[in-house]
Length: 332
Ligand code: FCA
Image 1: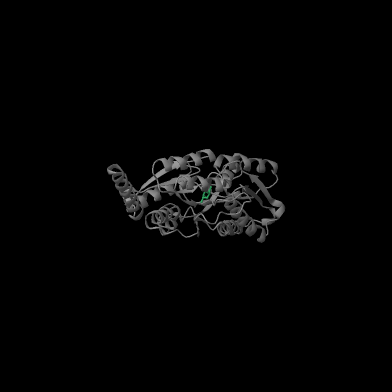
Image 2: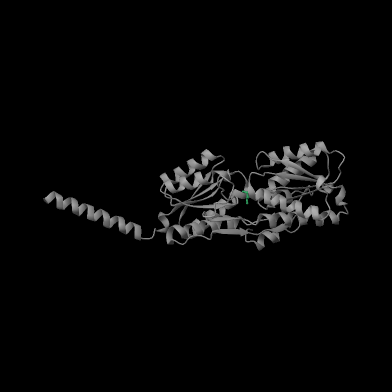
C-alpha cells in the first residue's frame, strides 16, 4: 500500500513538473535555434549568419549555424539540431523539392520551421505556404535588373536590336526563374529581340557554373559585340562578366547586373577599374538574417507565429553609390 502511495506521489510530481515546464516560457539563455544555409561559402549567406548572430546577442539566445549543401546534409542538420535540444530553425534549403521531407523531419524533432530565400514546394511544385517564409520579391527585383541594363545600354548609345543577352538560368529554383524572367521581360519590352536571348543554364548557383554556362553562349555567337547579362544573384552576373573577359570583350561592351550586394559584388566595385559587372540590386541580409531569427525566437518563446510570407525589396547600387545604398539599408 505504502509503495502504491509512493508511486502515485511520484507520478503526481512528474505530471506537475511536466505541466510547469510546458507553461513556463523558455528562458532566453536556454533557447537554441538553428540557421541552416545551402551555400555557406557564399558571402550572402555569411551575411545572413552575421545578422542572425546579432539577433541572438541582443536577445541572449544561441544560434547554431550549419551549412547543408545537399539534401542528406539538410536532413542530418535537422536531426543534429533536435539532438542538441534546439527549438526551431530557419533554413535556406539546397533543394526546394525537399519541402515535405524537411517539414516531416522538423516535426519529428519538435522543431519549429521557417524558410528564408528559397521557399519549399510540394511534389507538384506548389509552395508550402504553411511554413512561414521570407524571400525577395523576385519578379520585381528582376525587373529592376532589366531596367538598370536598359538605362545603361541607352546611355552607351547601344542599339538593343544588336545586343545579345546571356540569360543565366537555374530554373529548378522558382525564385531564380522569376528573377531572370523579370529582367528578360523588361529587356524585351525595351527592344531586345527574343532571338537574342541566349539561355545559359547553370549546374549550380555559383560563379564557376555561371562562367561555364556563359562561355558556351559567347563562343557560339562571336558575331555579337555588345552583351548584357542577368541571373539569380551576383555570382551569376560575375560568372558572365568573367566569361566576357576570357573572350576579350571589354567592360564597355558588357553590362552584367547582379542581385545580392554582399562581398561578391562589393569586391568587384572596389577594383581600380570598372569591369563588366556593372551593378547589383542590393537586398537585405539584415532582414533575412536578423528579422527571421527574431521572428523564430518570438514564435518559440512567446508562441507568436511569424508572418506567413514576407517579400523584401532591393535597391540598385553601382560602383559610385554602393556605400550610400548600404548605409541606407543599415548594413554598413
Ligand atoms: C537564393 C540565391 C542566393 C540569394 C538568396 C536571396 O537563395 O541562391 O544567392 O540571392 O536567394
